[in-house]
Amino acid sequence: MKQRSLRLVETENRFAGLEPEELNESEAGSVMDLALRVLAARHRKGQAIENPEQTQAYLRLHLAERPSEVFACLYLDTRHRLIALEELFQGTIDGASVHPREVVRRAIQVNAAALIMAHNHPLC
Image (cartoon, rainbow, N blue to C red; front, side):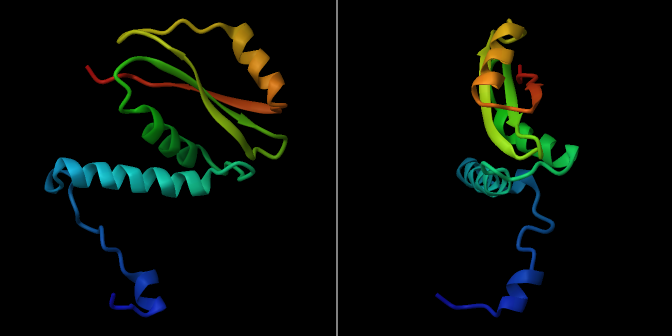
């Protein structure tokens, strides 16, 4: 394989100008898998969550494609470092029953100091 200079790799954006419509189903799946791996590296256990936009992108990739309602929690320590992302409840296409007692119980089990609750809006 041809090696590129480090400077070129850092400044080149191979995805600039690429539109989703230009990808076939397999390519779109590969891009999603790659995006999830990049976000997983940024949000690995012990990594701080720095801003709402970063969290929104991470949750969107994890929850957006679900066919039914999903309620999830990001559990954080005192410095807002990620402990875990867990999908706690799943529902139907238009709703999910959430039991606050279970959310709190799980937060105590993982020793979370903070949590971010999220749910998706399933595609119809």
